[in-house]
Length: 256
Image (cartoon, rainbow, N blue to C red; front, side, top):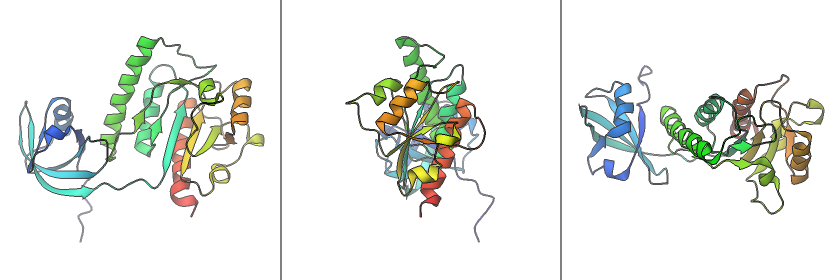
């Protein structure tokens, strides 16, 4: 009989040098994270080696904990399962810490990549230096969210781009089925209607106030399909999370 009270061990991403044939060593920021989990000798934890491929998850038992390092004995390795879908989220950058919420929540829900966008109605007008600082913060948030949700890889936070550049002629093809989240139900489809049997989707979420008319026209010309996320008007940050939940649930369960 399985122990239903046993929680999934906490997981951390580590560099290749942190793992030997029989031991795992946590130091620096990873050690701080482990300490926040109050790991004690005898307890289990997991690590994923950051090699660029989610090859395997290592399960280890804590041997010792100090202010300098945590040492774990490798007990087993688990094969990291591959996702059966891919969801690429393109959310408009939001003011304050709202975009932090988008990054954390989307990664916990299972997004594959996040590309921050600048749109006509994007409120924070960030210069190159500020944008670089925010991108670095979002990447740290992505790592923490992937660890917290026990994901076997860290979803990519790409460099911010202008929505018009993404739609411009000759720009990179958008992966999968491209969707545009909109409130106007009279011109939208359901996610199920738009996605069908597809297992890869790109979805665009506008800022506070939504996309402007010119952006919507350009999106339709590019082949984006307008989809509804429900009967009510959502805040921009809520829309991103709702989109992730609805699209992923459909690709996992609704297209069989």
